[in-house]
Image (cartoon, rainbow, N blue to C red; front, top):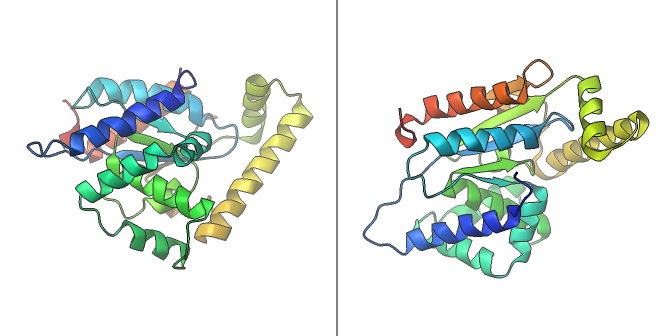
Length: 238
């Protein structure tokens, strides 16, 4: 399960990338990253869990596992004093020296100090550059839009399907589930509009949009995996 030791997996992911950058004799291959934008209750967690299993079984460099990052996990990365330095060291080693310029361009300002949104933007961009990561939410598709290794997915579903899903996950009644969905969707859209000047429903932001009301989570994961492997064939076994 993704929830079991999720942050420990994030730590191992970042630490393993740091170890690789210290190996001067080995040229590191850049793997894809996947961003998932979703309507509340569309099953991003369930799809990601299945997607990771598929990609881990097909990816080259199997000792480096695909890792899941959502809002809470990204926040934990920011709060951990060691991990940001490891990430910064990786960026320096990989000579991706324009990361701050990219952040400034996205935010439209050159800040005197890092705020939470700026730190989040930097962290998402750095994780995306590392590859083998699934980034859920936080404007990941917009932040990583200029990375050549990024693949962007949007998950949608009919409202009633999403209500049933939220009821099952949180144990809410129907009214509480609907209230939760409306609040979360509004919050996510406001986040994108206020910080990145985009709307989550802009279809041209994504490589593919999948309806988990018509597709099972297994099928959605298989479709995403197939599309990613087709776009980045050098990173996967035939």
